[in-house]
Image (tube, rainbow, N blue to C red; front, side, top):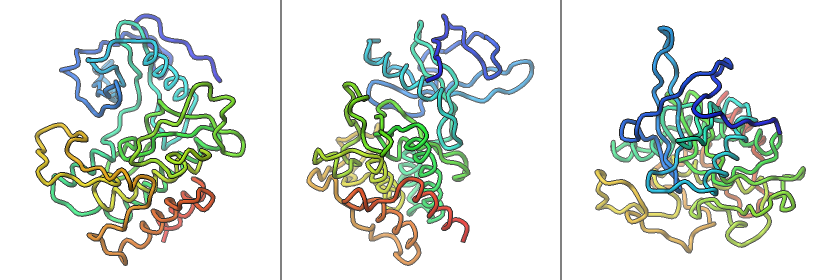
Length: 314
């Protein structure tokens, strides 16, 4: 691992190695991009420098209701160290980290999460994403997972639509949120010896059968939830849930507005009745390959990306 130095006070290293002061306004003046357990992701629009525009950052910060503690600090620092070591076009880029005054991880800002795009599509009364959009997600995130699984020997551990960022009209998709990663050995199997106290975290509705049944965790455990993410793009809803028809869109989304079919967790959802099987035959094929119950029957991330690339090039 390359040496990671926590920035001193509020001085952070810029892309060019130059030190400068970072001023973070109070949370109400920041645009919230997303949230997770105990954290919020905010957008920081940086002021111009020497007449030049500077790209915005995404800041992962403790939720204002959460008091700073060792667990969150260590988890955020571990994610910062990991991001700083990685370099891939389909993985969100590291920008800065600070645990003085305000604890935050600065990252490359992207347009929207895929999860937010799905919600917006529902609000706008639109149908499923076009097949090419779904195939592009399989290609880009398959490529990111291949890098993660083989070069970094890491399991993402929480694949879902909200952890995929999209720029433009699916110009590029990027994997984000590496706070619950797990080490893999050379065979792509969960490396318990080097995991310490780490366990599989994930999000249950997206969890693979082997997770729920307590079986062996491997790189294929990331492939199952990616398959469910492709299904989300066709169904426009989370897996194994039914959106309440009386959902008030003016309120913040949470589990109180969905019916969870817990007994179906770890199973392959039916193909949405709202799509044309003929038109969506390629996305359906990718989804079904990724959601094979037996992990050995699922494609590797490399194989998935290669198949998706062939589909895109037709």
